[in-house]
Image (tube, rainbow, N blue to C red; front, side, top):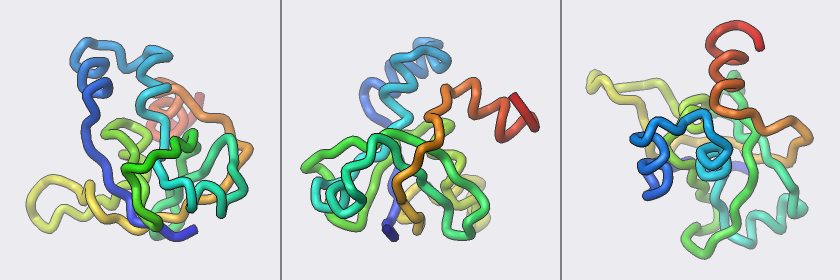
Length: 129
């Protein structure tokens, strides 16, 4: 499914991140999610996990779907976090800040493991686990 990705803070993401709990299970449960509407979730076959892939197809992250009426069809949301950072577009348009809103992504069911924040960093940014 093609979608537009938006990212941003949630109250619990901010509380956990500012409290120094980025490696906690609570942080993973709050942030390793992809909010979507029920219609899109059903069209994907109601998967337990989804893979969100960047427009260029180079970066993918596995997260858990979160069905919510807050989302419209064709739009998804990942809380501001390492999981979102994997797939946001790096273009800054000379602002120094990547495009956190409206980035085209692909969302599809996956059997990949949803990694913790520490595991994401080790795998994607440090070259291994």
